[in-house]
Length: 505
Image (cartoon, rainbow, N blue to C red; front, side, top):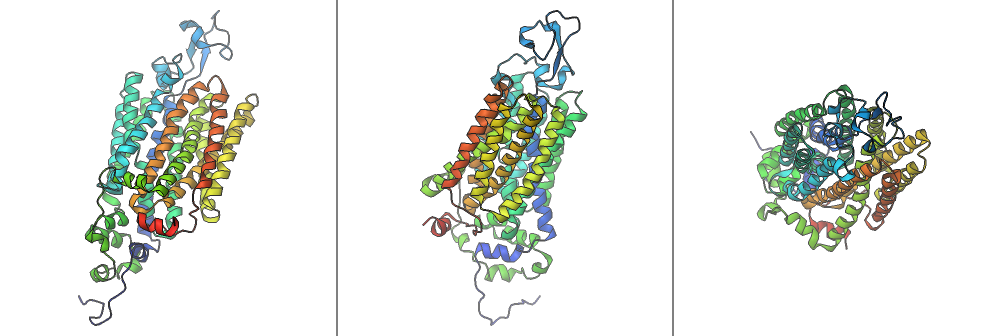
């Protein structure tokens, strides 16, 4: 086959990595849409395991037994001060770990142990696993491994016989789950051109919403059966999804470029390119038009080298601390609000479904905010409104309809703020450490997740313990964005030096 480039023509101008990626996949095609959507679908299973405790760890409703002289009404009685035979659960005991293992009178730490252990595992897994996406494994392989391990440990959770065994498997499940959201977000956005990254990032959040919503549907159909079935229905499909990603999705071209893996880089771009661009992506194009300077001295990272780079640069360390502070407040609200629904006098399945559905308009709002407004102002305004509505929930306990409405508005604002914030966090750090940096930010979200179940359990007797405290925290945490740079309209950088030269001088 004749080389389309004339033999005596002047040498073509070398393109940078960003220019090469934009030339090849700048036009959004069907292949990019399918692959980025499949990669983003990991958020569906991430949501299921994140909020599964809303149903499996809920305290079921109970009522006084007929002809009981010591228990007259469940609305005013304290079950822990009543004889065991004077009251009973309204549903079979196996519908929740609380009723099956008789944890109704245990302390808030014990009853929240399962959910807290999951987020504690997320915290540990984030530190030990997430940097592998920037170093040895890459985005795709770590996503596959994490989904597979999360689903396997979830299946093992279903055979638990006590709260300690249950908490141990939940910790392992959270440990495996930790990198999923970050890998899915980074991989999905790096499979498309600059123009489409924000919208593709939102796709993951929409899948997360459907994953959360699916829990209500699954739990509703097995409400008279064992809580263990919920784990089976959520984990088995995740195993199949792991295989789909392994065989159907390409690795991030940017990561392959930085690792000096030229042939895989070329294959990935050819696969992702739109049909009108594929014919021009010949061997001579990659040899003569792409600046392969990075291949001469490839950047090799050990497990924690990406984190070391962030800590050594004062501006990067400052960004990391400030974004983590914002993430903690949003994480506390985002994980705690669904868990607190059992404390409200409403149907649990319906309230969870409505909260899950509220994430859809929240994602739409996030898309509009990402495209039209500055990141910092959007996050700050939403965080403050969420906190005010949350605190108001504790003040209007006698007006149930108003309380539920305020909770819904608070959760909506939290979801929208969280969606915008995750896109913002992606834009704050260059390619070489982006995955690790965003993973560290998600660890702050996990810390909020560790604390929220305990506050929710304590809030069953006093609403201010959860709604008031969390409302104040999210308002304060939102203020930290004021000291972060605005990223709207910026060109993403690939190296720390480029970021420092362009935006930190």
